[in-house]
Length: 129
Image (tube, rainbow, N blue to C red; front, side, top):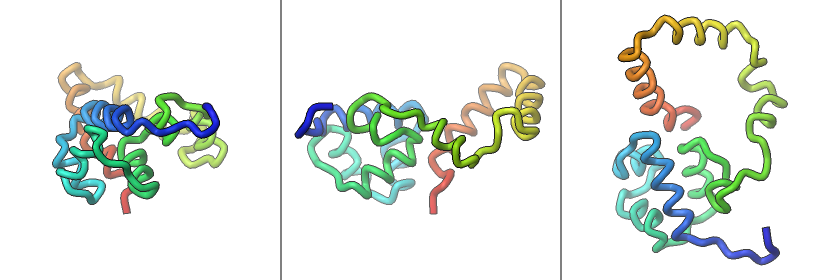
C-alpha cells in the first residue's frame, strides 16, 4: 500500500454490495442488521458518502470480511490464523467439527441448499450485540 493512499469510496461501496448480495441480504435487511438507514447504506454502496471507522467496522463484521479487504480489496493477513491463535473456534480437528461434517454428509442436495440458506441468513447476526 502506498503512503498517503486514498480510499476509493466507490470501490468500497461495490465491495459492500457484492458481499451483501453473496449473503442474500436486501439492502433493507442489511441496514436493519447494522443499525443504519437503507438510504444511507445505498449512498455508501454507490460511493456517495464516506463512512466513519465505527461504521466500517460494523459493516466488515456483519459481512464477515476483513477491513483490509473492504478498504483495499486484498487481505494482508490471515484472519483464520489470528482466530486460531486465540483458540476462539477450537482446533480444526475438534469433535464439534467432526459432528458438523457428519451431519452435512447425511444431507441430500435439497437439504444442503436449505442449510446454506439458513447459514447465510444467520451469519450477519452472529456476534451482534
